[in-house]
Amino acid sequence: MKLFCLFLTLFLAGCATEPVAAPVIKENTEVFKYVEKIELIASDAASALTAISEVTDNKSVSWILLDAQITRLSGIKPPSVVKVVEYRTTIAKNDSVSAAKDKNLAVKIDNETSLAWAKVEAMDAELTEAKLAKANADAIAERAIKDNAISKITSLGLGMIMIGVIAIAFTAKKLSGMIFCVAGVLCVSSAWVLDSPIWQYIVISLGVFFVLDVAYIIYKATRKAPDDAEKK
Image 1 (cartoon, rainbow, N blue to C red):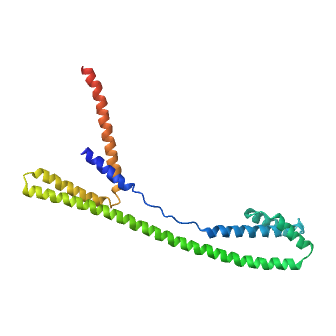
Image 2 (cartoon, rainbow, N blue to C red):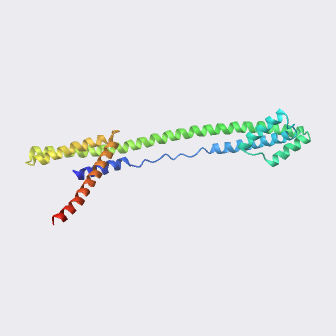
Image 3 (cartoon, rainbow, N blue to C red):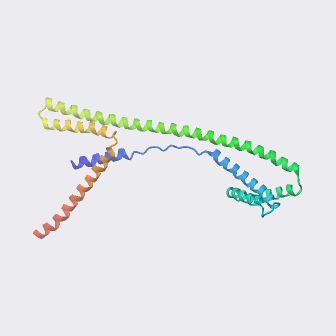
């Protein structure tokens, strides 16, 4: 009986620890491209505002608001020294041509940013579908493995029951036949227990029972040795 409990514990634990392949899903690389673009935009905007703030009264409300925006944008990416000089020169020369070019560039970047975000969302949707498909495939594969195990264990149990019935009906070994029948029933039952949500608790219970039983055997052996020595 102890050997049977040990075998059943190991068998169920083996089923419990059966490795399931984790979904391998690539990252959304478009996100990194989008973040890089946003950082560049923030840095350019902070550079322009820095140049504008230099020609604004630092005691005015306008300057305070400009400085606040520079601080916000610098948290994403600090202003570029080269761009600050560029904007400073445009302001100093009152260069309307350069200002118009910068406005056109801003519109172009705005369109590119919208397109980049659309790519991020498209890849997110693609990855979500891939994750769902992989999860469904893993679930189907796991179910197939479990169904295969249940089928084999059930067949084994039914075979043992048949052998037991034949032994009881046609031989003198009635007790052996009954044992085979009981073992077959337990075998068939265990197959469906594996497919129920309570089998983890059965594994734990059998494991605890076996550990306590071994501990008790060791305890009895250690107590018996001194008693034998005292009797001698």
